Length: 137
Image (tube, rainbow, N blue to C red; front, side, top):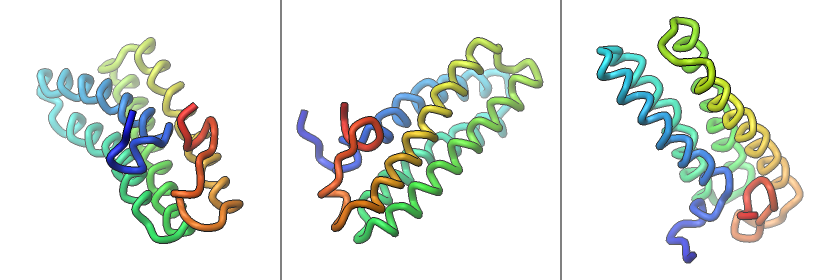
């Protein structure tokens, strides 16, 4: 598959994008239950994960890209927090919660690994494809 933007080939972006679709459905359900603020917060936090990966991939240096990856990882934690709060208020079932948290934990590890790999690469993202973190497996 040909990609228009570099970030589309990054596994971390792909995982985040798939998770976004699932959590947008949760947000739609929250809205139908008139929990508008929770829906808005959930959409914003999960969207921030992929937005920061995408924006950072356009950086002119790896160090700058790492800053955006850090923002993305922090959004992973924000998303997890929102989901935990929803589950604590019996708004999200534990089965769904555990699945989402597992994906978020995996994504956090992969973002960290990809960010660290950029320390060992001269040049920019164009030169870096890491199996299991940034590059497509």
